[in-house]
Length: 304
Image (cartoon, rainbow, N blue to C red; front, top):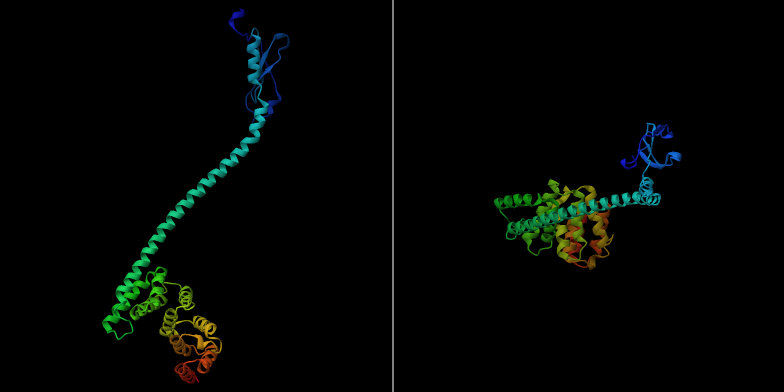
């Protein structure tokens, strides 16, 4: 009967070239039924094509089906062009988000490390002041006090790099006990290698390059106290630094601090090289203070 819906009596199977395309998806499309009326063609990969004639289907409905079965080529083209770009953009955004998250974590960790380092530096300075402000290490201390200061300096030296700011402040103090304490801590750092030797020597020699006579004098005192514990290379670095400020032949000696110049004459004989001898010989002639000239001359004669 015409009202019972589309008739599917006529179903025809045909072979399609899609059989060889096993990757293809199921494809439904409208087809011309010729004398039998409109039809729908169903293509399944690997199977015979199925063509169903739809007799009695109103034209508007068939037209709607026809439109649904036809892919919107314009939109397909647009999505084909846009989707890869959107995928790349999404990957970039995800990478950027991960980078920002990683940076935030790193920044927070760095802030915590900085706070911990600052706390440690303040503690080292407080301990140094507490232990060395009243008792100078080399100021006629008894054996018991000397041992206590030695132990205290070891504890402070154990902080390594974190203790260097406190050492610098102690080197620049006007209090002899603090300065001696800072020098003792620096000595323990060198002996215990709690700070790498090259870094420690570079740090301390850097104090000398400031315009502070107190720091310069403390550096020279420390070098004298270290004697030959320094390596030949480190001793040569110190001699080279003095040749830069005093001149290779002592020509700049009259412009230097008197106390600093006197300590230079105590240090140079510890490293009797041609460079140190040349500087000491020049100081014996060119320094303005006669006491410094005499001391330089005596030290030079002791090296012969």
